[in-house]
Length: 122
Image 1: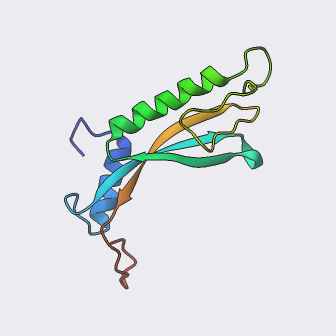
Image 2 (image 1 turned 45 degrees about the horizontal axis):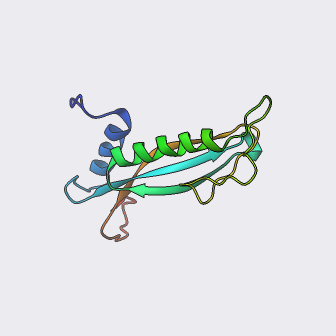
């Protein structure tokens, strides 16, 4: 794509929408803030919140990261949560020895779904 304002994720989503037979005007997207912790077999992730505006999702993600720093127990070693502290924005918050991070993912929203024999998305 030639639009300098679109990042790679947006370009890929636009390509997917077009290939699936859905014009951008007929489909929309939400931005989901995802929490994650752990690695390998102990890795887990969870959806925290969804927003209709990407900027709001990014701001929420940043607030979640700042909140982790606020409630993290100071000191050396593995990150731990200070006793009696809870994450103000993430009700499913948990942390292991790798800490907790957040990211934003774009998810397409469709008004309806009608299966077809071509294997295309709506």
